[in-house]
Amino acid sequence: MRGPRTRGRVASTLAAVVVASGAWIALLLNETALGWVQRIFAVATSTVLGVLGCGTVAVGTSIVSGQLAISVVTACTGLFATGLYVIAVLLFPASWRARLVGCVGGVCVLFVVNIIRLASLYYVGVHWPSALDVVHQVVWQSLVIAIVVAMWLLWAGRASQRPERRGAS
Image 1 (tube, rainbow, N blue to C red):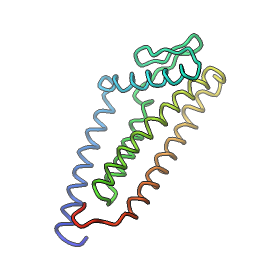
Image 2: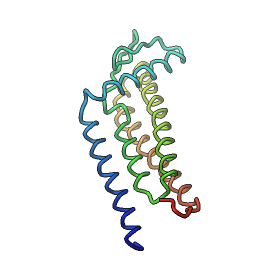
Image 3: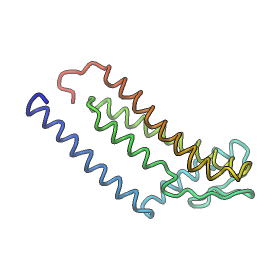
Image 4: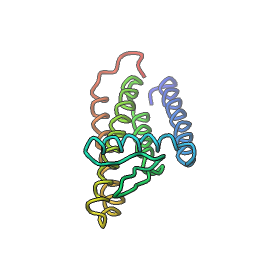
């Protein structure tokens, strides 16, 4: 570390991340508070499945058809993986503008990835029900982790190549 100014920036960044992480964890542990997020994912996934020709409807936090019903619980929202990605971006020594772009872009990508994940789980549940647990708990969890790591590596590589402007933190 170079001096008090650098240490101050590091300390303020770390403090902000610790506070945000604590709030994020508290939110993830509150199943009731995230009902609206679960409903958004249920509606978005049912809409995508409808466009693809499946006769699904979102009922609360579930995606329902005559063939299958799946529930979107907090763990199925991808919020934990999204939170880890955002924390990693915030902790990286880049400008706040680069961090903002990384966070917003990453959250959007992970939202779409999660819709694809939920829609694919519906298809697997309908067409290959014996594989649903493995695809849900092994394949997609591994893929989501790999996607989060790859996204962060891509973002960090780009953010570290940008010339640091004087006064940026």
